[in-house]
Image (cartoon, rainbow, N blue to C red; front, side, top):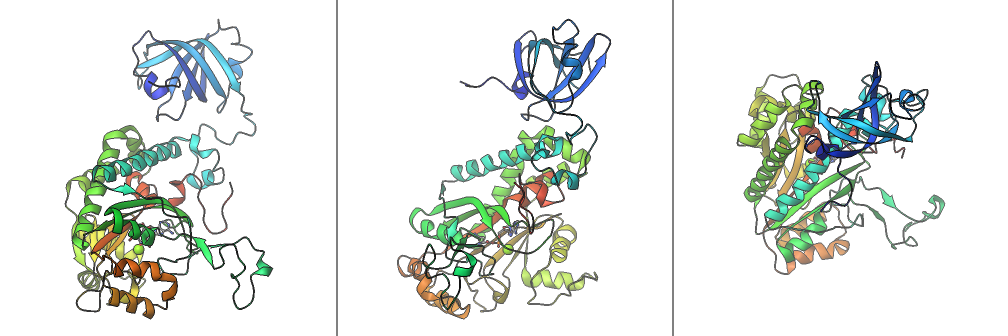
Length: 460
Ligand code: 4AD
Ligand code: MG
């Protein structure tokens, strides 16, 4: 039983003749003779609901005729068949109550189309637009679908901490968490007197903590906000983003990739099935060919290439890349995009990267040069997922940690997982905003998160 009154997405499904209550914001008002046509949206779906207000309403001249875009309203009336094209029903108003006015002199969202750049400058109002409204709905659908997928596969969710003392990726991109003033953070051991007695920061990944629970519960995932003080102003990087990280015991790299592929196909399928109207908006206004591409992702098997094969393909390509290609380099966005858009023409797993360019926790391959890593590259984005089989051999891990300069005494707990009942295990991280970009075709990652945090930018 629903507790709150139905919203537009449900109201339009009710039988003609129903008495309805519509609560939302005015998109447009058009007057014609003795009538006004009011288009009202409430965020529950892309399309607004048309309300017919007649001049017989007691507040018609005094209020209805003064309504402008952005005003909030409560309308009661009868659902009737609509003669207009593009909608099957409309509401004949019995009452139109103005809840909140929106001064047209200053309200920045007008009927015309605004650029995404402009909308970023009014992040608190942009969810009311068609595109940003659709992004928020698709994001929410994907969020729920992620939990559904892992629940169905027998995983449990683990809430890993946001404040941590381990820099999982070892890239030195951790934001420091402190309650001291900058001038107090000095001397040989600047954090000794700090809240946690040592340097703590915002998590860059929940993987290491997820590994703890993989060694007790077998199949787990963590999904939450992740922070990186990466000073990269690109269309694919945020300082605060959401990451999904499954971790599986008794699983190798092949199993890891099988889960990632099945998951992505499932998530794309849910959006195709449940968000048709919103997807059509992106297809029409943002990314032509989007729906066909998503259908292919759902149907086609993903391609697998080893890093060495990928490097050979790039060298053979004859492309003038900005970053020259040779074995040992980290692949750049231009290389990643070439591999999935031109070589594989499908999502592609690149595997077994050189160990020197990957973090300490990835399992060393037999050749001693590469690790059991995988990145999933997709068209338009590049790296969507990064994962690996983890190093489960105590001696090898300890040696790699020492080589990476990690203080072994601080990671005793992580080594204990290899000391007591170690098992082969694997996992991956999916950048949730990159997934939302991928399914909507939105060009800039700042437009697929409600309130983006990037260098120099955290307004509300
Ligand atoms: O490849 P990454 O750094 O992998 C990890 O953090 C592993 N610990 C994951 C694991 O195995 N459990 O990050 C994983 C994904 C990337 O593939 C990318 O999609 C996304 O996280 N990502 C970002 N998304 C937005 N902004 C950033 N600054 C991102 N950095 C990584
Ligand atoms: Mg990565």
